Amino acid sequence: MAFFVAMAGKGGTGKTTVAGLIVRSLLSKGKGPILAVDADANCNLNEVLGVKIEETIGRIREELINVPQGMTKDAYIGYRVQQALVESKGFDLIAMGRPEGAGCYCYANVLCKKYVDILAENYKYVVIDNEAGLEHMSRRTTHGADLMVIVTDGSLRGIITASRIRDLADELKLKIDKTVIILNRVEGEPPQETLEEIKKTKLELGCILPADDDIKKFDEMGIATLKLPSDNKVVKIIDDFVDRYLK
Image: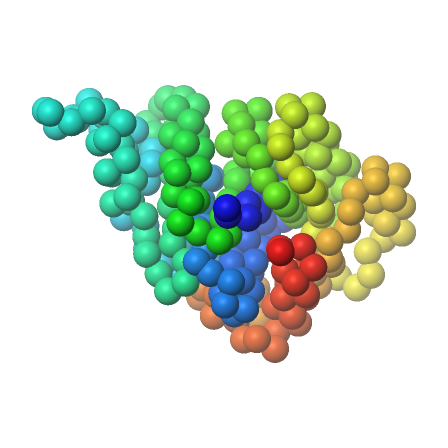
């Protein structure tokens, strides 16, 4: 059975980059095969992983009116989802995407969750990069996970938001075995107020990632995070994090 990692956090915290770093670490340790899931309507996990998306589940949803004769809708969707799977060395990627034009994302979310569960049978790890904020949880895109990783900055507000995400998961009774937070792009030591809030909210601090010039440069130049060198300080911290939390 696959080990599910669900990424969460507010926008702009580097959640997708951290998801890519986790995939990179798993690959470097030979812990594949891995299914990377971009469950954000604004897909960009593929850029972090250095692969190209040709098809999304959202687009498949829009084309359900064109089901071939003699084929059920479920069979057609399953066939198209397999086509949408981007295959790479050690990992595959599936992207939710979004419906064309105005419309509800709910059905795309339902399809994403359903077919990720089906695809997961072929992988050791599934890393799901959810969209920012809390809405994906109310839609139950994150239906459950062995590990939920909440990425936040080092601010007091960031910790408060992280605790709200954790609390909402509890309220929705999502099946999450463990929740940890990662403080990302921290300059120097985290403020004392931040550390006190972490204790107060009883969040488990997985690791602290310092601001890193290499990652910033890679982002600015559009270079895949997957290509970061093994001696990069952030890569080393994530490697240790993976050893401790991803069994």
